Length: 252
Ligand SMILES: O=C(CO)COP(=O)(O)O
Image (cartoon, rainbow, N blue to C red; front, side, top):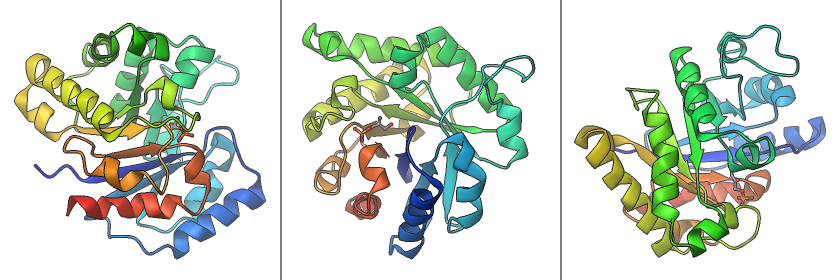
């Protein structure tokens, strides 16, 4: 159905100028499939975005890790979607679980942010995922459906959205979801789109997995029918990110 494999590197709140230059050099020298096979997006902290954008190979792109929920103005410490557009930053990550948990971003707030960013012309990596308690209580599907519904309530066009399923218990823990666990949730989400949005969106929306993805486990995860790529944290700062990008070849 032509869902191009997507690999995002979320650098989170990490890096110095020197470290950033080193990662970019590694990426620029990497042998990976072309843009027709895999879309690669790296997301440095705001302060490094212009530097990374200027140094990065032209077939890779950059994302911000957040943006403000509406038009900029008197919002000290925030970065607006308009500013990202002005700097020609094409992508933004919205609703990461670290922000949902540490900064109390609600489902509704995340939905509003996704809608505003899209309206400004940004492409969005929208993050969802259940906690360990929710998984153990058997509410995973309900939780991720509710998170997706809050976004769907605010937007009508999913063309510029990649949905990142990131179980909170798998983030930064080394406890990766099994390929079967990831596939089960991705398939449930696709069914949710089928039942609540449209068959077209269900077939075309990319659903990527995040949470302890590394060079060793990426191929098997990529082999799952409804896993359309990854959002990578820790391993995106290391040379093994190149192996994760190359997991795209599993699909071809
Ligand atoms: O949160 C993540 C990506 O957004 C995943 O982080 P890790 O790959 O470090 O588990």
